[in-house]
Image (tube, rainbow, N blue to C red; front, side):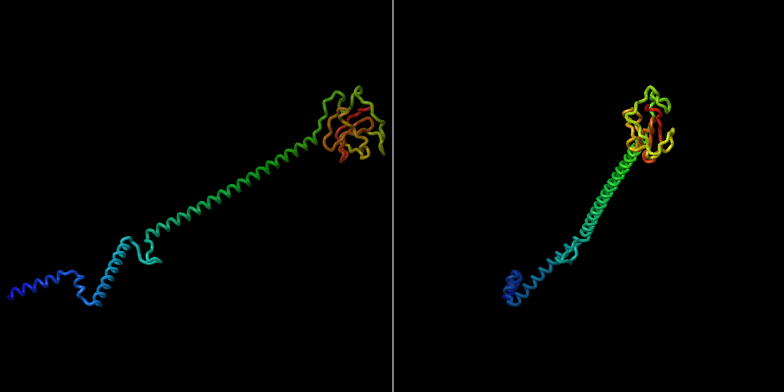
Length: 232
């Protein structure tokens, strides 16, 4: 009989240990159950946080920042390198833009200098050419005069009677002499085209002096050429 009772007690104890935790907890008082549930919840949260932290450490992340997580070192290095590359590109573009501007400014200055030099050269050339034309004078190889004297058969009749200027005296004027001012007033001018004479240079004029014509510088009265006996 005692063996039967022992077997029964053993079965009862085995069944009690095999019951689920909920059944066991249901037998505990309410405060104890609540405390145990809160402890299990905290333990589960702690386990989750530990696992999450472990994963972060595995990825190389560290806690901190506004969200509690900051980028890892490699990501920060990549961002820093990208920022540096952007800055380098910007600086390179700015330098290249400045170089182009300087090159364009230098090219404009070179063109302006070239144009100014070319304009000055043209002006000098025109001025020299004008001076050459103004000072150009060549006696024609004309059979109408021999040396300085006009051939008698080609002499011209004077269009008007010669009016002797004040202080006039017979004199054979020569190249290099200085003719008095009242000898070559406007009414003594001779039209060289009417007699096919050499064109006078700039500042000179053919002047009638009695039967002769002389080429005179109007500013100084200096005689440059003389044709004797043009009129009869």
